[in-house]
Amino acid sequence: MSFINYSSREINCKIVYYGPGLCGKTTNLNYVYQKTNPDNRGKMISLATETERTLFFDFLPLALGSIRGFKVRFHLYTVPGQVFYDASRKLILRGADGVVFVADSQVDRLEANVESLENLRQNLAEHGSDLDKIPFNIQYNKRDLPDIASVEEMNGLLNPRGVPVVEACAHTGEGVFDTLKDIAKQVIMELKKKENT
Amino acid sequence: MGSQNFITAQVLERVEEELRGFRQAAKARVAFLIDGNGQLLGQAGDATKVDTTAIAALTASNMAASKAIAELVGEEKFGGVLHEGEDEHLHLSVVGGIAILVVLFDAETSIGLVRLRVKNTTKNLEALLIQGAEEGVSEEEDLSPFAEITEDDIDQLFL
Ligand SMILES: Nc1nc2c(ncn2[C@@H]2O[C@H](COP(=O)(O)OP(=O)(O)OP(=O)(O)O)[C@@H](O)[C@H]2O)c(=O)[nH]1
Ligand SMILES: [Mg+2]
Image (cartoon, rainbow over all chains, first blue to last red; front, top):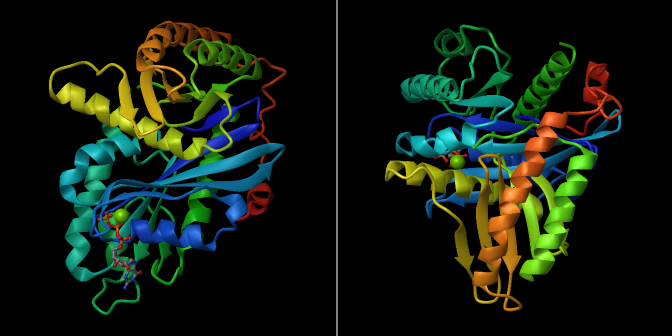
């Protein structure tokens, strides 16, 4: 849920990166952190296991500049993708203004993507939110690997609603900022919509 | 935990006045109030050496996890949470169902005194936030920064 501080003239929005284990969520945030001017970002916090799997979440606060005198800040979070961390995923998802679904393009991860997306839909519903109505996009990650599904096939399985899709290699950073920019735009346009109603 | 999606300058002023009074009475180093989603609502004391953004995000998640654990063992919630360090200690407590009071303190005071003062202050803060939510945003403040926004405005952001 976006938060406006009228005293400091700041607006804060929350973006959550969701997706199956090892799909590359943390890699996305690491890349954003590395490529962002230190003046525009806070400390990145990663609560991870010894083997660098996300245990609770990653957190990266970004200051994106100003719009009409209001400082725009985004808080990026990732969830832990491993199936048995569902209780934690639910907590992190609460209050999200927008969600990025990072899908693993490898053929043998197609089922994991479908399950994770279904899990996202359910967890949003428990917070009284509807995946078909919130700012949402999908990143097809790991396009650099050999055994990957085609974009058409992935769209058929994961994207019946036709939300924006970005092909990426989070590893090298390809598509990472395109994904972030798209979801940021959607979130801000949603704020505009709310103010106009 | 529920949350409110704005704070006005007037409410922030009242909240920080309460926090200043609390900090003095409890002899705490820093006190701040965050909402359930980890947004900083107000603070008192010298927080220059403290990364309040990071602490806010972590404590909100921590409290959300505590609450979920409490529910698993059949409690509605756990009371205050204390993190004891060598020199610095952190006390967290829920403010109604809507916010979290974070208190950083050291050997200048005692956990007994902090707990005592927290009790009163969380009640006062809850009342202030509820009152603020009822007052809403005045027309003067509500400049609708986003109503007129264009794609070009968004493109000017650093991304
Ligand atoms: N080849 C390739 N590897 C990638 C890409 N993106 C991420 N990886 C690798 O995939 C592995 C897992 O990445 P993470 O970012 O930790 O995955 P995650 O989604 O955060 O995983 P959980 O925390 O368990 O949910 C790492 O070894 C990354 O280097 C990519 O685009 N291509
Ligand atoms: Mg991760």
